[in-house]
Image 1: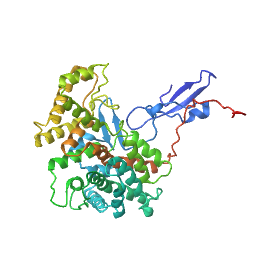
Image 2 (image 1 turned 60 degrees about the vertical axis):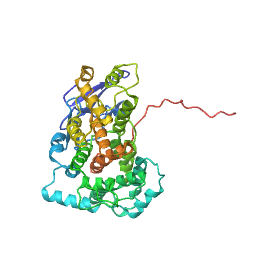
Image 3 (image 1 turned 180 degrees about the vertical axis):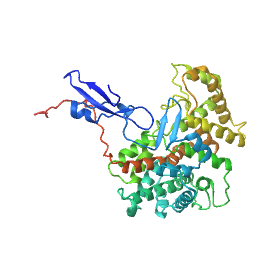
Image 4 (image 1 turned 90 degrees about the horizontal axis):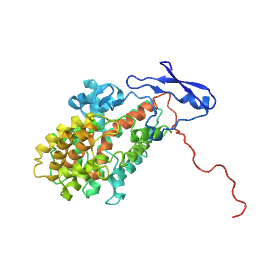
Length: 430
């Protein structure tokens, strides 16, 4: 094997196939298997695509072993400390941090797109009173494509950026309407004098009868949550957006598909599972010692939710950032004598000191802290995945936009290993 190719040998024919190695800016090399079928008539088999590079992307880099997450090359730790969510949105969309003037213009554009059509507002009236907020988000996002026929030409660069602005701006409004519908309260219009996060909290928790002033700690906590969830490379929902968009589907339909993928409990429901676990511990009266013993027992089906990560084999860098915010928020709310939060903090303390979990690298992940933070802010568990979608929208549309600009883009068409019946004839008599 040379430094630029890998040689595969077909043991049946003895034929060798040279496959190129593609290298990115960072990370491992990738074997380009595109010539494989033409040379050997073989495909590759990779359930879940865990070992397959589906695209080239300059947006996000993850090194799970080292606990590294970069947006456009910038460490997530620096962005969380110094940036705002809208600045991160600009960075993901355009590849560079904005100048002060570009940032002012971007913020102004987003503010001017926050309202949705009154027809969209009325659309929510058709949902059952107990409809899941994610069901409403999938439907209303798909419906948006029926309102913007003038600017959904996927081949027009200007249309693509206009659609991106609309998605980022309208997502908080639509998310708040899903929440308000679920609790029977009137919808609130956005206020352009408020920041992005202040505006969302206003639409979520304000009522016409009285003024609502969001806590600065709440605003900062939300800012962090959105930044940390803005993108995470080729996860299930992002890959869904790309696969849907590869057919030429408009951006609103593509993002609706991403929301549907995120809705799955194995993807976007982890932070909800954390709260359900904590509530179960509190209601059962179990001690943390008993909970830890159950988690260590391989014969017990109980699992600690919010610990460990499929990608990060080290401490989730997002969890390190959000951990302090979680503690600050609970301190402001005086979490003492609140059993759920006391249980969470004690569980965190014990796990971080226990060699069993340290050796297995089962550290608290971002879902553990984000669930606690959202619960403390008064956001119900049914809205947790909606909050995830709110932050991830910019990642989805950035990947969609990048794919549209990629000269190698082609419609997604995974192959399969057929395991059904061989060819057979329909019986002459039945």
